[in-house]
Each structure stands twice: as C-alpha cells, then as structure tokens.
Length: 166
Image (tube, rainbow, N blue to C red; front, top):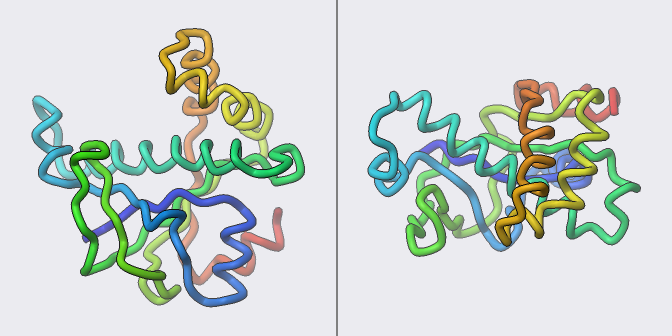
C-alpha cells in the first residue's frame, strides 16, 4: 500500500541520518476503502492525490507544533512510501492509516516538498491551522493560499542533494 506521511524538513534530516522514518504517532494517509467511498467519482490517481493533500495539511500541523516554527524552513513535506502493514483507521478520518513501526529509506518511493516561494504562505497556514480545524473561514482561506502551491517531487535517492539545497 502506498502511504503518504506528513513530515518536516527536520524529519527529512533525521531520515537522511538514520536511514528510517518514524511517522509522528504512526499516522499516515492512503487510498483506503473509506476514502474511495467518500468520493462520488475519481480515479485511483485522483484519490491518491487527495490522500497526499491530507498528508500535506498534516505537515502544516507538524510545523505549527514546532517550538519555533519560524526557525524551521517552513515547507510542507510529504514522504511517499510503500508499506505492507498499515492499519486502516476510518474512525479518525477516511484516509488515515497507522503504521506499526519505522519506515526504512528503502521503502520510500518519493519525497514531496514545497518550493521556497511557498514559505510565506506555509508559515501563515501553520499559524492558522488550529483555527481552520475549528471552522474559521478566514483561517481556511489562509490554508488555501498555502495549498495553492504544488509540492515538488524528488526521488528518494535525491534526499541528500535536496537537503543541501535547503
């Protein structure tokens, strides 16, 4: 199963150093049966993209939870990985899965990261994520500004070079 794991730049650095990724609370997102049922239509590719966007929004929560979000490069990060043992958690949300342990770098299929142009919008969105979760339409608009930026795609073997560019 392809899973999309929310992360931060610091978590990418840890992945590069340790060779494994530990998802916060073991949480990931995937094309699950519940996600498929929640959409009236859509190809697998479109629904996988919806799961990736859920992970990107969760990345905003990780940035927001940092002690000093402004000290991180404020970029959304999503790690795509192929795993065999994810547990479906539709009680949490349609696309949520739980992982049973760390993901080795060998299972990482791709890394998705915001470009530098997105940083101001991402930092604003990280500050507004809690209000958006509580239904504030202005905060949701701020999140939309960040989500208008497409995530860049990197192959797993490009991780060291990606980190050098940041």
